[in-house]
Image (tube, rainbow, N blue to C red):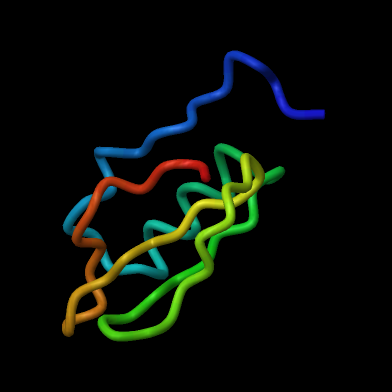
Length: 69
């Protein structure tokens, strides 16, 4: 089970390349499933505390604050 005090938001990753951001999240929170979504790619609307979605721009850089859900 995840630490209830573990970080759920990652604002410091905005602007980083997706793979670098994903690696940082996996290092800090190996319990999370990190998913990368490119512009226009479909996305589910279900809320999952074990998932972080990285929304990236056309250059593959994180464009919004990643958070669990």
